[in-house]
Length: 270
Image 1: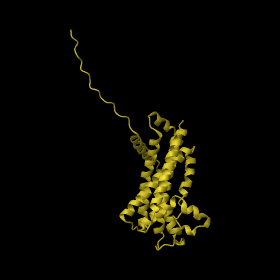
Image 2 (image 1 turned 45 degrees about the vertical axis):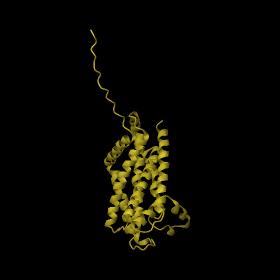
Image 3 (image 1 turned 135 degrees about the vertical axis):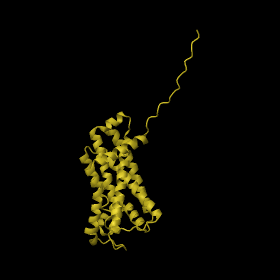
Image 4 (image 1 turned 180 degrees about the vertical axis):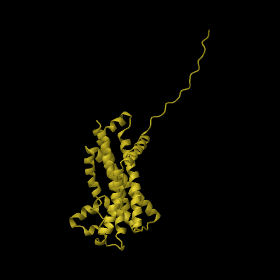
């Protein structure tokens, strides 16, 4: 008897494995959920910049001569506080990364074929979201205590670009520090230097009022052009090339931090 032909079932293509962007978005969601559960650290990262702004405005503002046409010190200090807020918020990324390395969760991720870059990118994305929320909160408090910006629409766009660029760059630097440190406590200590950078700059007082030996560092460190850009743009003043210098600094720091974190992740997960 002739053989009966058995129809073959149609081939069903297998689903594609999730790509790096999917992994990064999942890791970002995880990091945000961890941040919400760590309420103490979240409240501190939001409250500390506001407290510092209030201290500088109401405790020290009357004693600091800024040499500007604005009578209120709050008009001078808010841009520096925004960068300070970015530094404090980004610093928590180092602790989070170090805790992941210490807790062994990275080995679990690697067994699921999740690479180091998506894991770190998730931490950075979560840090960026937290920092943007904190920035809006700080800016709202600044408006309540007398800050009155007069930026143009293009100025607002440049302000957002500079702030986001620095938040992302500082978060990646913090992630690299978290890989370098051997404990969350050490990671928190290392990020102090990053959070300290706004102080020897024009954030809280003009550089001309500082000691002569500090001028060179204060004028040429990466935070100063960002603060000068934010201050000039928010107050509707001429800023020249300061925003582009600030963005160049942020881009350079970001490139170095991404490369360093890739090398450090491979070393730590051998």
